Amino acid sequence: MKKVIDKLAWLMIVDGKLLNARSKDKSLFYLPGGKREIGESDQQALIREIKEEISVDIIADSIQYAGTFEAPADGEKAEAVVKLTCYFADFEGQLCAQSEIAEIAFIDFENKSRCSLGSIQVMQWLKNQNLIQ
Image (cartoon, rainbow, N blue to C red; front, side):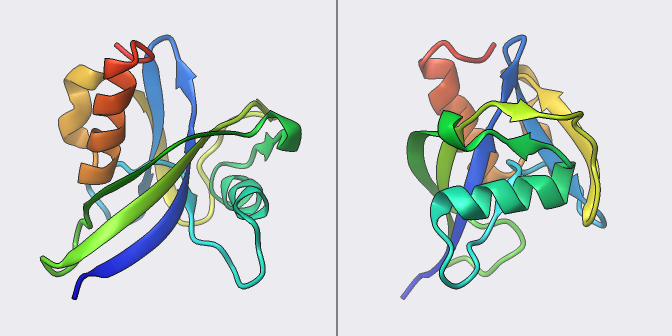
């Protein structure tokens, strides 16, 4: 039986590149976001996680579902998968890594090897949609 790590992710694209975040003590970049707390909606959890990780305020009424993706979970046993429920959204504020995030970067498809398998899968979909370079 596979273990599913259920996460929400924010898709922020600038100049054909996708925003990714790298946690402290990790080498790969991940999509910014995280797990829901008990009783939270996807929208509430996404707003909270993005504020905690990269200090900006997601504009609630701009949140739009993009898609749900599954990929092998990095750093987990072979049967573990990460399920990424992804959303586009506008924001207010200045992007800045904080909390457990060591670094944020806008990454294009050519440099996808810097990213987790989940990020790469989402990047492939975005590339197929002509949303990233």
